[in-house]
Image (cartoon, rainbow, N blue to C red; front, top):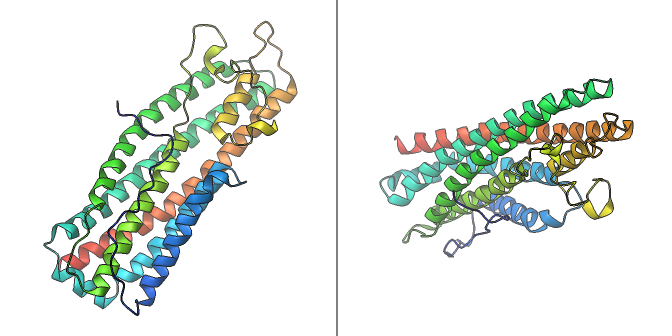
Length: 306
């Protein structure tokens, strides 16, 4: 199985070109949106907000970017220039990229939807534990199993993104100023899109320890490290799923007793609710982006069919 760096590779090495003295206003707006996203990417790891909140901002920035790209593709000047080069390899790559990012977004959205269902089932089980039902273990087993399966799906999507990145290295020569600017911003847009999706997928694939044979060890990964509370200041950088792992683990620290402190149950419930809200935000961001990627794909097809 392919292995991936814990941080997405940042690659904006598209060949430099001479911009026209007066770029089209739409191209300028795309440049501004790209700069915002690059700034977001540079500061996202040091942001005070949660990783999920940061990723929601990244997805929101991508939606703004693709709204501008859609406007750019509707310009008669852009349509004429692209149609004149529709048999070029780099045009085919742009078209191919439009459908592959659509597929990546759709696959990621499917992962998010399944994850939301799994989290809510676990949330319901913990809620039942609060009223004395001790059958939460099966739900925990199912949640851990889902997380492992999800990681395998994420690896496949990441592999697709890595392959797409390698196709954006050669810049076409001898283009007029406007078309050169269009191709450049589209390719930079592809690279930042790939980078943000990689960040999102790596967040979703937070590793889960291999379960042991003991009764309560299915959720003991972080307990083994002596970590018993996500609220501790030294763990502020943990993402929502790591916090849930800790809170669920805390329910089963004392193997000798079936009694669990109400505070631990409430903490697990709270962490699951926070994670649920984060997933909702990511789902909304992906839904909006998916619609825009469809529009971009259709615009490309309309241009190249004339």
